[in-house]
View: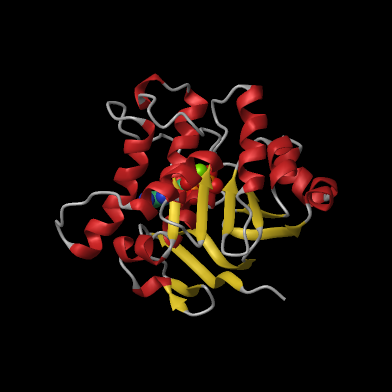
Length: 248
Ligand SMILES: Nc1ncnc2c1ncn2[C@@H]1O[C@H](COP(=O)(O)OP(=O)(O)O)[C@@H](O)[C@H]1O
Ligand SMILES: [Mg+2]
């Protein structure tokens, strides 16, 4: 049995009297790619906000890697503990090259550990940057200017900047929004290739064909609660899921 990357128990998030997340429990194991779907306002982004320390829940427990209490940590500490989050808008540096962006992502992590120490990538770092370039389908393109990349390539570089930090949990919020069909197909291949026993991946996405192709299991959120969890085929055929989400 594989280990739990994320253990979420009885999570409740309140904004005033409104419960954006209501007694939510879920477990995501290492090696897994979990799809998270649900109508607008279901609490999907709020869940990622809690997992990254941006929003504090009213109650509940969240453990990383079976032991680490994420709710006791700051946003920066959570990042350093191995939770990486990709936002919809890429935050790459357009004036730098692809490889420089990856180096910077590596350095920003090291700086937070070692203070303002001057950083030069050593051999290990350079090899790691090359590995990540391969993982994001940009082998040999490290010298390209990031500003010249297509929308899809910018998204992949952003994923690379998370991978360079070797996250245990990778959170992707609508990774194929705005992509062409071809870019979406390539992103399916890319994300599937990121499956690793050292990593769990959570993907929020409205593109159901995409979710079906990348996710091992799907969690359906509705009004802050877990409506259903299971393989996509089962989720797609479920009357309650069809009623609140798929049948719109
Ligand atoms: N900071 C906030 N203050 C008040 N309400 C919020 C806040 N963030 C989110 N919400 C509300 O919580 C609910 C869930 O939002 P969200 O997690 O963004 O949903 P989803 O990503 O599933 O569309 C929505 O009704 C939203 O308006
Ligand atoms: Mg959202």
